[in-house]
Amino acid sequence: MRTDTGHAAGITRRAALMGLGAGLLLESTPAPSAPVARAAALAAAARRQVGVTLAYDPGYTALAFPNGDVPRGRGVCTDVVVRAYRDAFGLDLQALVNADMRRHFGAYPKLWGLARPDRSIDHRRVPNLATFLTRAGARLPLPASRGAWRPGDLFTAMIGGRLPHIGIVSDRGPGVVIHNIGRGTREEAALFDHSLTGRFRWLDG
Image (cartoon, rainbow, N blue to C red; front, side, top):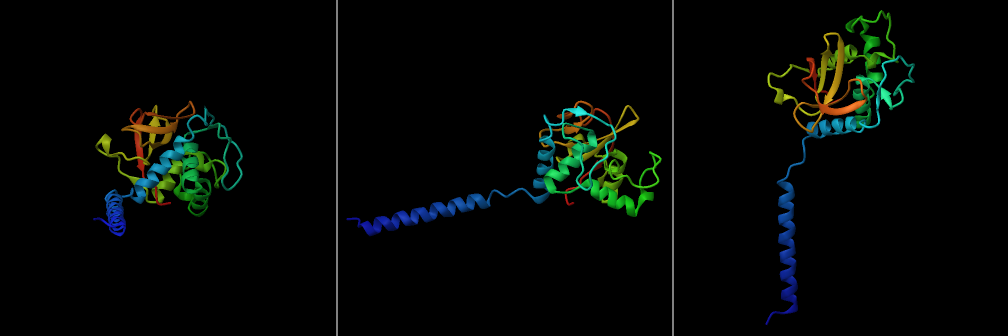
């Protein structure tokens, strides 16, 4: 005849085995690597701008410093990137680009006739962001295969051969990007719509 003590011991052993099995199951499902998790966080931060930034507005605006921004209901393609890095990682490209330009102004493009950095606009210009990211070691070769792009990659492109553009590769399918190309921030399959000029992966900060 089974005693209550034996019955209790059996329950305890089964519970222990079930707990061990659950632990093994958890251990066999690895957590995402840090770069993958950071890429997902960057894409998510960019995606949160969809439905918020509804207009494209390239007008010059004097900004606060640091962490200055135009109202989030409007902006340009660079603002999608700047806001995503601020929201995802607390990285302020306005301050970072300004600091690098003050030290190395000669390394940046001379397309706007400026004799010194302008902290209200420099980080909102695609050629300056591309230069900063290159100097930060984030530039990668353009891949031979379309499938080699990864979520969180930044792309630059030339629209109509004359207008520089930038955006963030989404984690929701090949060729899907998050950008503002004139109609507010959108997530759409548009990576290969224009001539690509650069690829960057900047997830370390």
